[in-house]
Length: 431
Ligand SMILES: Cc1cc2nc3c(=O)[nH]c(=O)nc-3n(C[C@H](O)[C@H](O)[C@H](O)COP(=O)(O)OP(=O)(O)OC[C@H]3O[C@@H](n4cnc5c(N)ncnc54)[C@H](O)[C@@H]3O)c2cc1C
Image (cartoon, protein in one colour):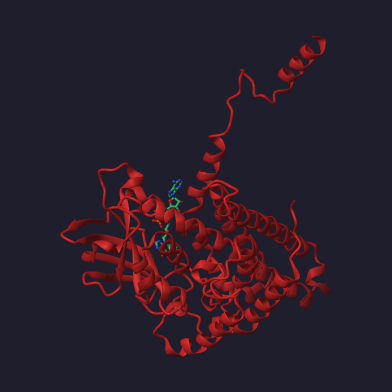
């Protein structure tokens, strides 16, 4: 049965999280606003603020809520996580404070799934404990949305893998202790069996940062961004640095990207809700033409559209989380959530764009300044439609999943053609 009731225990946790995010996490956004700030483990001032907050979260049993109990997380499942991530999505720092920041979440998941005991001890434990950060290095300067175009390769020399090639937009690499790099190792295989994953320590000789790109909204100096353009100049790692088996790179990537996408969608619900909260406050706080802003019908329309669109999107996210829980408990086949995750990915960019745009409009000139959270929300919008794969690719996936189950019309006209159906019904009735 479908049930939207939230148990009192969970509600109490959510209430604690909501208050904590407002009281402790949102101030961190204002005190340390750089895009890289939550990942910069060398920033002593920010860390001094961060550590006690992380301790408080751990004491509440709310640390790394995406992880199952076997990995030291509470193992709440995706549906509960969706409700929690909604609250964390209101603040840029909150995921770091709660141990659920991407890309470390996805990297810890694949280390847990495919890592050897030694890899887990060396990389997974400190990653989960929040002591280090990591990078997922997949996109290349000439190819992103289609990994079949990747050329960064690795080959065996003695007891080592040698990596050569370039990677683009490897987020947080300047702060990372290690990178998980997708490389072509088996060019002779069919496309999906050509790639492998290698774990590369950040201080490996030959790892060269060409540039650190900034994205819009990151207000710092040149070459001070967090998205690294990297050249791997014959970087050598031991054979046991491989995550999974040779040729399994696609499989490993898929295992992390699905979770990453849906977690972004969960957090985007929170971001949209924050924009709506701001709209509502503005609508009852400002007057024009002799009445409150919220008494004007255009404003009411903007509010209603935003609330309805967010409710629809939130239900899609919750259903997707439910399907993943069913898959993980073995009640649904592996991959059952893929199409729904793609739907979330497409919709989050659109819904967030429309809601944030209305919130900015309603705030007038103030909405355009850097004096409210709306500016960061707005400048983060393109990333929602690009990171983890562009909208178009996900739309294609949704359409293809349904097209493959579609049945060809048996005659000249569609099966819904009324004259054809009527003729058949009449024939049946006279028979
Ligand atoms: C904020 C941010 C963080 C990121 N972090 C990382 C990271 O940590 N690690 C990493 O490896 N990558 C990262 N990326 C890269 C991201 O995965 C790529 O941007 C994404 O896969 C798209 O690749 P691309 O940028 O090369 O665009 P392209 O592949 O060049 O695509 C450009 C455009 O072409 C069109 N297009 C592409 N394919 C199709 C298609 N099949 N059908 C129709 N139209 C299509 C779309 O309009 C698309 O937006 C990040 C990106 C962003 C924005």
